[in-house]
Length: 521
Ligand SMILES: [Zn+2]
Image (cartoon, rainbow, N blue to C red; front, side, top):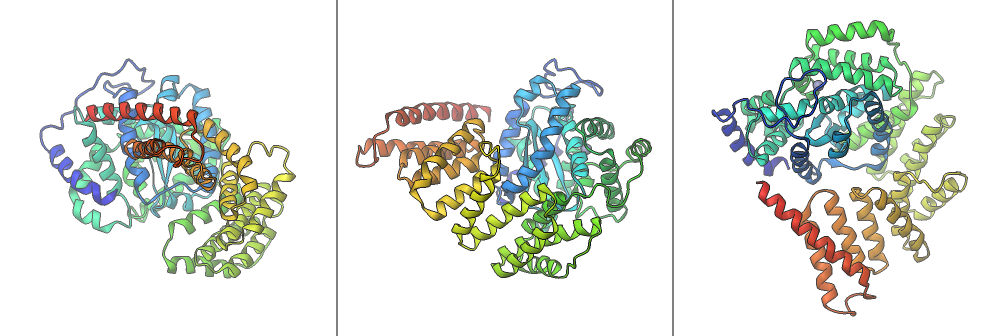
């Protein structure tokens, strides 16, 4: 994304610096603005289309990461926030229906989270690695969520006037690329132009205070500890005193003003003091460790994480235990990536002993052990682990996503035909409930292919592309499936008439959607 987009961005910036950039209002769409009602905003449908345009590019970015375990963890915090926003009346049914409400993780090490048009949100692994508790993460996500429910984004977009959507999309993508800490080259090329574009995309001081106020209400209503909000603010304040904006791009897009700090202090007196190491969560520490290991692809960084795990002594104080759990988890994953399976197994045993009394921690070590076995090519042990664990669980029918994906990987590695029908059915049920889950569609395609059901494999691949909004690539897969059908029964194991008609219908739908997209430009 970064490089292909630069050329467009430079054009976009030169446009934006000209007289075209007048504050203009697009039809307000009659939506009610609870507090900051100052006029123009983009309609929710137009904002969603713009969001989709941006999301499509982010999905293609190699830094985009659908890590099932981290996604599962973040969803466990995100869904209660959404429910609380609905319960409080902050999230209208119109926005609920029209927006994506999707969090996209990025591998970047910088501390950043941002709201995009259309209900898409970005969270960098760097942020997950520094937040100290689920409550701190909830405070950041609640703040970002409020920027969207309060239509701040739509007002910023409306301020861009009558820019073509592709230009606005490019502008936002460019600002995102320029905010990546490790991307010095981009910063050099874009320089002041990026800063000027960023300035136009920034929220106003009032918007920031409103997102703090509503976000605080949402996170406490959702049952998170208010001290997480204060703790996160302290963290940001410390970083801002150190002038660490390179590592904390979050501070550039959400600057800490004296008013925000004042508001915060009055909330702090209600919330009570932040105790050091308050509400330690082993699971959170482990997920922060996972974020560190996945955001540090370099061999030296991985060796650093491994030696940190080596140096962890065992102690019984709860704060130290949390730190140890995070370091050991990161160390296991780093060792796996360095293919040092002996060290990985050693630290995993230490970690398992450390978190044995914590159910969430136990679940995470279980998944990590399956991952370790899979990475080492030992699918038999991985399979045995998955079976012993699920046999004892009452609600095994409702499998969590990481478990489902791990089972799929084990089955593909094992190549056991007996396992296909049950797995296929599970995956089909999942995508019926979650049609936008590209990774599960892709796994289903692999499972169909392993059973030589080529038509279905191609269709599942097409759906996986649709889920990531790449309609042209999806259409290619459907065309390939139709070519196969035309070659007659020799090309398909069994001419599947129902599948053929689904493929035909989907092709028409995609072609019409692509024509609409072309008109939007
Ligand atoms: Zn903000």
